[in-house]
Amino acid sequence: MASYSKELEVAQLAVQRAAILTKKVFHEKAKGTISKDDASPVTIGDFGAQALIIHAVKKNFPEDQVVGEEEASSLRDNQKLRDQIWALVNGTKLSDSEAEKVLGGPIESMDAMLDAIDAGNSAGGNKGRIWALDPIDGTKGFLRGGQYAVCLALMVDGDVKVGVLGCPNLPVDDSAPLTAESGIDQTDAEGKGVLFSAVSGHGATSRPLGIAGLGKSQPIQMKEVKDLGQATFCESVEAGHSSHGDQFEIANKLGVTKPSVRMDSQAKYGSIARGAGDIYLRLPVRADYQEKIWDHAAGDLIVREAGGEVTDTLGRRLDFSKGRTLAENKGVVAAPVAVHGQVLSAVKEVLAAKK
Image (cartoon, rainbow, N blue to C red; front, side, top):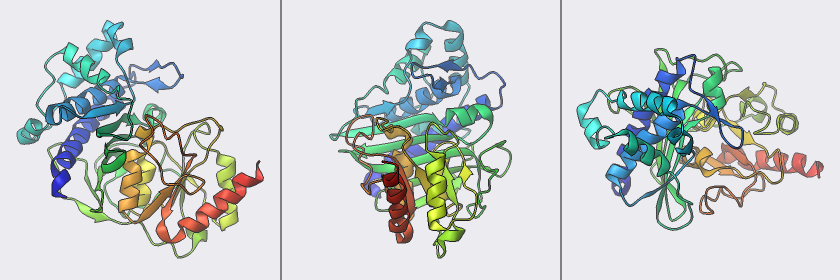
């Protein structure tokens, strides 16, 4: 792991600091929400978290590129929103001064903050070192008080090498099972907040999210599924993100009896990686839809390093080398290696029957 130890430390601390910022916004009734061109929401938390993370990445690895979800043009025209975000960014620090030094300290000015947000404009691709960043994955979950995640992954020549997920509303306890209520009415109270991490070839870990530098980690593994009928399925809350009807048919075909757990964000990847859930399906709702790399890069690595297999609905590995989207993939099927083939077969049968 020595070759990526610095990248892992910076990613973990940057996600931790950004998650602290998002937690402040999570508790506000007014979250400074605006709508983007595709009608998806973005909050002051998204902008602030992106600024903090890109600032830390660029201070440590100035030549690296970043594929980030947000850009700052709307902020340059909106002083009130800009001021809100600057106050948030300026007021968010880790309580460990050494950890703050690792991250390059505070952002120097409002202009530097806007420039950091806009530095997430890489086109991606299969050459060089590129970070994939989703400052708040699951913004709708964030707004409704459900699950969300701060997500960061390093890709080298298109291959994911480091992945970190900060999930403020998941329980710290890796053995806490998912329930139908896991995706709704959440809090970040004591006992909540987990940081998942993985380095390619070195396994996956979890640790308390915390506020003062990195706490003790422990290795995580996907749970062995001896009876698919008892498996816990995870899927998106939004019907516009994944076909609930197809998932229901697939579950029936596999004999799954439990209701699926619907939750927002890559918290689903983290949950199955540590065995709280078993299978994650994201099934295409439109033939022309392309998944964004920042929605999957960190979670894909963490699940694979925890003993899982992640493919699309045709059985192909997710390919992060094609730009800002998973242009060569359709949907996601994530499951323990031993049962992935069975799950994939059921997925193919159900989707083929629709054609």
